Structures are given as structure tokens and as C-alpha cells.
Image 1 (cartoon, rainbow, N blue to C red):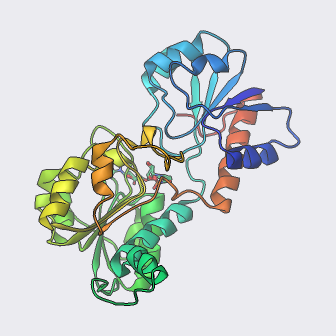
Image 2 (cartoon, rainbow, N blue to C red):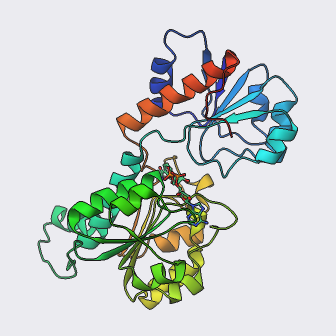
Length: 328
Ligand code: NAD
């Protein structure tokens, strides 16, 4: 099949090309993000392959459906950026990679926790300047602390497994209880109790209308003073303006973000020569107790291999009229 790969980076090209060896799929790589305006690049292709910050809203899908593409192959687990109703009405099939490597995201989540707790980002900058003072670097023992997991699916449980090894008490909130989480010793609680009891809160739920801004001013007011909040799920789970107020008042003691609600225009690009226009994002960068990574939690060799393999397998299944099991 002729596949138009959007938001393509050199690593996408490398891993997808390798995964497609031995198939008759023809991959064309476009650096452009998929939007209503760039959708015309997919004219003449059978498959559109898209990533997390591509715009798959109704207008883009309508433009795509004008020509041949019949399959949207997401290189992600999250699909909050796809208007599934519009896709259905346009007879566009959508597939995703539901579980490429929960461990990659879980390990990055814990890396953010530890780096913030022990102020590794600040220590690194200091030591390079010959400043070996410990003032301001005081951390806490993560074991014995209560960690609240919002969302106890594949990634939430993978985080829980690592933190269990540290000796943390695990509590969780989810709309479904996961037996694997219970086996770990995680105690399910109501959302309010999760806010109230957790020393560290880690977000692992998908972005849906129910989870949009689930961490808002009200939630933050109910949290423990000095709480650590980590978000490696989707940016819009957090109301960023409310989080900034929480940081200013000291209610939030540490904030670790791999995702940001307006990341679409920022992430995955080198903007070091430009003036960032997003004042909210710029404000976040001024706090010593905020650590931001640019949606890199998934970015391991193992995850990229799995994403590429499953994406190509999804396309092959579609081309052969088989059910991949990954259709939305
Ligand atoms: P999953 O489907 O296995 O688990 C998600 C869990 O969230 C499920 O248990 C579900 O019941 C729960 N949930 C749904 N609605 C909820 C609600 N309203 N309140 C509480 N819980 C709710 O998904 P996963 O593989 O664990 O991934 C979680 C999220 O992580 C994805 O949706 C994606 O947005 C994000 N993600 C981020 C990266 C990254 O690189 N930062 C990579 C992969 C996935």
C-alpha cells in the first residue's frame, strides 16, 4: 500500500523502513504535521500514518476522504486527536498501537519523580559551574510515601510495579478496577481521597471529556501541601493556569510534565533560535521545581521498534482484509 507518513522524523523513517522490509508497502515520509491544510499531501496514497500532534479533526478527515486514503494508521496509543464519529461517517478506518511498551512510559514517569525529588536537574547545572553546595537540594525518601495513580491501565500498573519496589504505598482511582493493580497491593479510592492522601500523584488516564482538566483548581485545593504532580498521559488532563497558581502558592511542591495541553505548536521541534510565544509555557519554565520533557516518555528503542512493527502489521492486515484487532 502507498503510505503517507506525517510528522515524520529521522527516527520514524529509520524504524518504519526497517519494519516494512519484506512487505510491498511504499512509505513516503513528510515532515509536515497533518492538518486541514497539509492533508492534500496525502492525495494518491492509500494510508495516512499519523502521530500524536497531528490534527485528525473533522475538517482534516473530510479533506482526506476526498481522495483515496481509506485507512488512518496511528503511531500512538492515544487517539484523543481523532474525530472518530467523523471518520466513521466518512468510511475511514482508524487503527492504533494500543500497547507498544508501557514500560518505556512508566520508567520515564519514575525518572521525572526521582529527578524532581532529588533535584537532579538543578544539581547537574550547578556542578557544571563548579557549585557543589547542597543548599536548596534537599529531597525526601520516595519509599514509604503514598503515590496516587489516576488511571491503572497498562502504564499505571507498570508505574505501580516500579514504585512497589521502592516501598511506596499505592492508591489509585480508575473507572474500572484492574486485578493486576489489586494484586500489587494498590488500594482503590474515590477521586477526592486520591487528591487528599497522595504525596505524589501520577496521571495515566486517556484524555476524554471526563478527564479534561481533571486536575483543576478544585482538585489542587484538595491536595496535600507540597504535593508532587506528574503527567505523562496527555497535557489537557491538567488545567495549566490552575497548576501555575498552585505552584505560586506552594500547594504544588513539584510538577513533572512530559505533555502539555498546548504542545502541538511546540513539541518535537528545535525552537532554541525562536522566541516562544506561549506565555503559559514560558511561565512554567521559570519555576525551579518544574521539570518538563517534550513528550519523550515513549522514546526508547524498544518502543519505537514495537510502534513501527505494529503500525506496519496494522496496515498489512487492512490490505489483506483481516481484522488487526487494533481498529477504533
Ligand atoms: P490504558 O487504556 O491501558 O489505561 C488507561 C486507564 O485509564 C484505563 O484503566 C481506564 O479505565 C482509565 N480511565 C479512563 N477514563 C478514566 C477516568 N475518567 N478516570 C480515571 N481513569 C480512567 O492506557 P495506557 O497504555 O496505560 O496509557 C495511558 C495514557 O498514556 C494514554 O491514553 C496516552 O494518552 C498516554 N501515553 C503517553 C505517552 C507518552 O509518551 N507520554 C505514551 C503512551 C501513552
